[in-house]
Image (cartoon, rainbow, N blue to C red; front, top):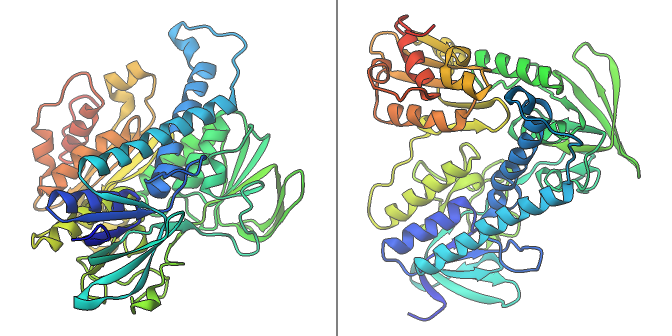
Length: 477
């Protein structure tokens, strides 16, 4: 087999793509991965949106801003005194860039370790080849054409722009620009109160910006269990985030000094938000531009996503698609699971992805995490259920941390006690949700979790107590 002929070629090196390539190589396939992301020096930066301008850099900035907030507002409670507290934004951004590069380099190392051939450039379909294979063009510094028996498309998604307000990444920012604002703005507007809007709004609010979030929907975090959403809204408002719901954006104008957003509020009143910068986070769209899908007849759906079945098969034989570019939640870990499953399906195995046990996390403070169905969804479906909650204010470890906001909520089937959903708002919710995911994947009951010994003192005790609360027998509240 020549250097340009492969069993599997993956287009896209984000969480879904690079994981799919590694798993395919582990299964014995001669595998290549194509990715076009560049670092500041023009070199390869695999990892996609998640690593370069999404999950990883946002968590780095959230951590930095959390340290700043703790030092400015909470260290005194521990007897720690500070004078002349300041923030060096350039250094903070530099640390973020270092964290990103470490992840980029880690992926390149994993390719080498697993004998995945990496091509730096933009991958696209050229044409169908003989024997059911496909020719894949790599555009970049070294253009070339690869031949693949199987193709996995993992090209991710792009930020959705507001009509009439294109991203310039200076005044009107996508997630990319929001991660590299050079100095703390006095005023910051955010359109959209989803994950990106809340996380980025939280970063710059902690550092001193006056942040206003404009949300078109009448409810806050409509996809989240509403008891959790209510608690989170109360916490964010107390912190200083101004959140307006039910607004309708009329016009966005920019000049050299800032942005002017004209909108109608929930009561129908005309309003204007003046801010130095504006983050627009109103969702993401599948990235299929430039894929040249028409060259091979690859079918797209009405959203521009690649049409796939439940096993990520496209309309073309031996062409698969995963992650943000297909149906389902746009989550890095969902893409990873699909990548592994597709590689195993190519090998004749039975890859597994359970959408019902995919966890969701918003990395604000308090963190928000959930898996399974909300109470509102269960009411709408008519399924009989029972629920129980336990507050972090009654948890010894949370008191010691000085972070007692929020609670853990369990929802179980009224008859079988099978766990149907777990919803957490509070400290380290992103870590605590893992136990719930495992429990639901194995069809555990609330009683199963209630009977398991949890370490003391730990935040996880709140999970056990919430499971006990389903049967109204908490021990510490």
